[in-house]
Structures are given as structure tokens and as C-alpha cells.
Image (cartoon, rainbow, N blue to C red; front, side):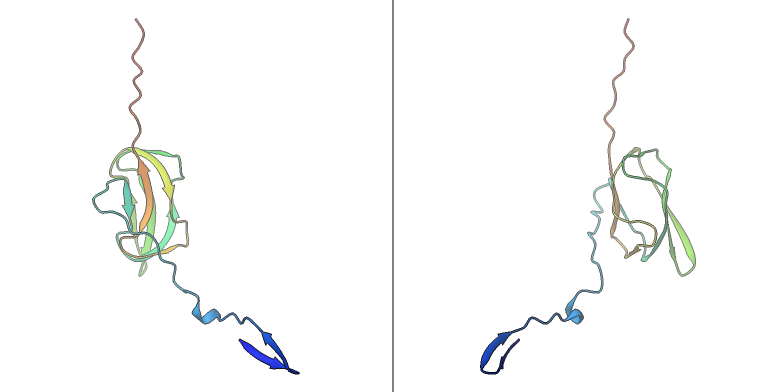
Length: 114
């Protein structure tokens, strides 16, 4: 904002907090990528049962969400390692948002020596 005081031009910056985004936008999961786990519904993450770097087996509990007092648990659909977590307890998510990314575990060829 520009104004003049006692014949001197002045410049003042005014922050308008009303213009700041109020909703955080998150990356959507790619439905064709089985290593990306998406939120199945809008809701609140109430529990995260894994951490980045954890090995998980098929059917292992990953996290629990709540919407309208109904809890939904997400389970691993394949074996792998948790590469990245994008949520924590208390995070509000929308349908299809990426909540965690897994990575495949390289097969460890440990053939016994003869």
C-alpha cells in the first residue's frame, strides 16, 4: 500500500491472512500402482500401526480411519516395506488421497554354501 505522510511517499506491506489457503491439498494416489495406498473415504486418521522402514506382510494392519463414528482399518495388500508415510494420527484426509507408499523388498538370495 502506498501513502504520503508529510509530503514523503511511503510504502507499507499488509498481510491479508484471509487469502491464505485453509485446506491442505494432498497428492492423490495412483489407482494403477499397487504400492500406493489411498484413503478409501474421507475421514480422520486415528491410528497408524506402521512406521517408515517397517516390513509388512500381506494382510497386516497399516492404519485406522474414522468417519461418522465408524472405524475403517486399512490392511497391506502385498508384502513390502513402508517407504513413506504421508499422514499421522489426527490428519484429516479425503477419498483417494495418498496415505502411504510401499516399496517391494528385493528377494534376498541366500542359498546355503555347499
